[in-house]
Amino acid sequence: MADITITERQAGDVTILDLVGKVTIGEGSVALRNTIRRLLGEGKNKILLNLGGVGYIDSSGIGELVSSFTAVKKEGGVLKLLSLTQKIQDLLAITKLLTVFDTFDDEPSALASYN
Image (cartoon, rainbow, N blue to C red; front, side, top):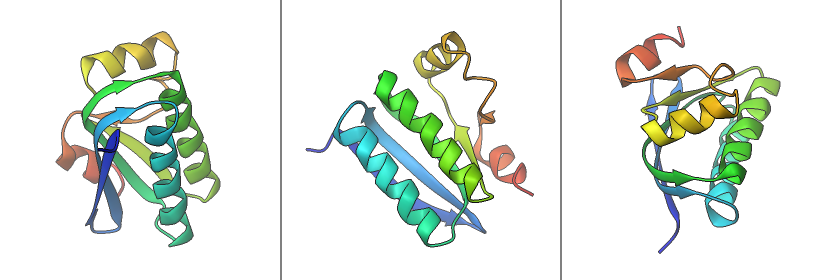
């Protein structure tokens, strides 16, 4: 059983990644990195990460979110976060990263923000 399952879906020109599981050092963060790189390679640079199903994220997972954000930005795109759990929100607040990301509680408003 993988640490993380990433399901991909399209909403117009936005690619939504539903993450379920743990984003931790090793498998979880590598899976995320590889998915983001592949999407960018396909020219998909509007990415919404749905973290509602992420039960745990460690510092390397946070690092992966930041490097994904940077990679997408470099390709002229934008990466936003959806449905942060309280734990992840607290972690991003402590690390001062909450201000870096656009975060949303519901999918419709997240999608609307890309236009």
